[in-house]
Length: 266
Image (cartoon, rainbow, N blue to C red):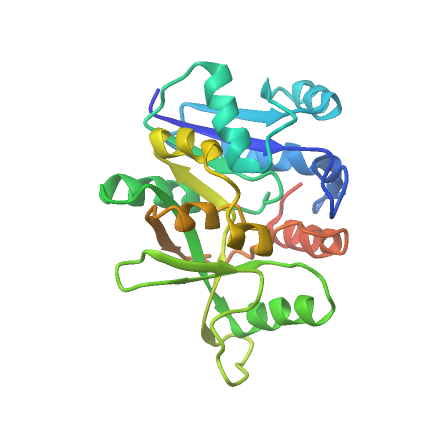
């Protein structure tokens, strides 16, 4: 097995309990849960050998099994999606070349984001893991800033070095730009897309490290890799006219449903 996608999903989210089972409707008004739409997005990625939903909750397991997903039950002790992916790989007894973590709150993730992520990790032997970044338009930057001004935890932003190595990830909108931008104008802000491609050895090591100080402050699991000196490759991807947003809060549902309708998704 070369590449496996694991979709970690937990019910007991502090910000949005039951989020994986939240219902989204597309252009036809057809109802499908967040976890089902994320699984469908994963199933459309080329070059993938297996897609697995990893959860510790019987309600999610039952729902995922009903729409035909491959499901593995993981420990309730997993503190985040990366730890759940590591636990899933161990429980499945598999040894893939690359493990992709497609978090279950990103059903709008285009297939080419993941395909380019896997290609980027394969092309950079020095990288321990890879994650996509999307240059924010003026409108996306304004939306991120609006979330922060309203006290909502919205998207994550990333800054990286000359060799695309991740320097920092934050729920604040960084870097500081010092001016406003037109809605369609490219900005220096990069939206971090919550997908990861890991080499199995670094994924297995991750749960053994203590939670990092920055990871705890920001609530961002990827910071544990940086705090332990691992190289995170940022792969710049392009939306190709597609809109992208993650479901972080209940207020995001109408926005994502509008995007699904615009894309013609049922």
